[in-house]
Amino acid sequence: MWVGSSGALGALPAAALAASVPVGAADDVPVTVRLTVNDVAQEARVDVRTSLLDYLRENLRLTGTKKGCDHGQCGACTVHVNGRRVNSCLSLVAMHEGDSITTIEGLGTPDRLHPLQAAFVAHDGLQCGYCTSGQIMSAAALLTEPCGRTDADVKEAMSGNICRCGAYSNIVAAIRQVRDAG
Image (tube, rainbow, N blue to C red):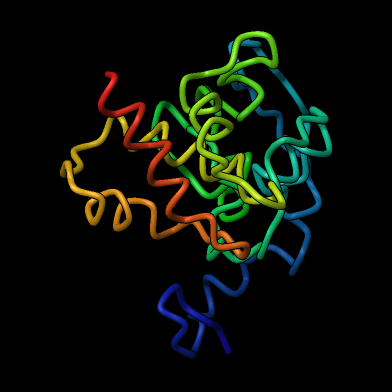
C-alpha cells in the first residue's frame, strides 16, 4: 500500500514500486544548503529532515529563536525568510537554498536595539521572555505588511504568537508606539 500526498491509501503501480527507493535511504543522504543568515553567508551539509529552527539553534548557535511547541502553534520560533515571517519549526532548512534569513540576533544588538526591541522594554512587553523573540520578529514583519491601524487589527495580525504570561496589552502598546513613530 502507498500513502499519497492527500493521505489516501492506494495501490502503488508496479513500475513505480520497482523504481522506488528503499524507505529511509533518500533521507540518509545529507544535502548542501547555501543561505544567508543575518547578512552572513552560510553553507552546510545537513540532514534533509533538519528544521530551519534546529539548524539555526544547533548548527549556528543562534539561540535567540526559541523552540516552543514545535508544531507551529505558539510562534516562539518566528524568523524572517526573505522579509516574511515564518515559523522556523515547520520549515526544513533544505527548502531555503539561496534565501535570506533574519533572526532576532540580526534585528538589533544590545548596544543598538531595533525600535521594537526598545519599545518592548519600554512597555514591559515581556514577562518570562520566552516568547519575546518570536513576538518581536512577528511585529517587525507586521510593520511591512498590510495591516489596519486599530489595536484589533494588530491583535489579529499577531494571533499566531502566544504569550503564556499574558503580556498582550503591553505588546500591542509597544507595536503601536513603533507604528505611530514610523
